[in-house]
Image (cartoon, rainbow, N blue to C red):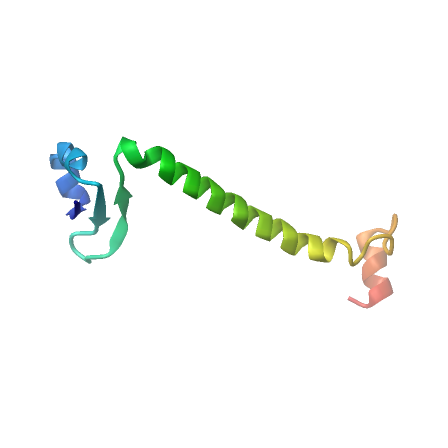
Length: 90
């Protein structure tokens, strides 16, 4: 079972967290989605999924940076930033 609660309701009756498969949390005034609470029995599975997703995002960022890291390899050498700017006109 799933339910939606406000943060205020959660602070009043935190025992309700254990009755549901997960609890969606929303802002009571603006009705905007704030997040979810999950019980311990699902925590390990969700943690594995999140760890994999975070690792994939980091790998994508690193791959994107690695595209540009090879562009200047060996061209700059020991030049200073000022020398490079004057050499390439920036």
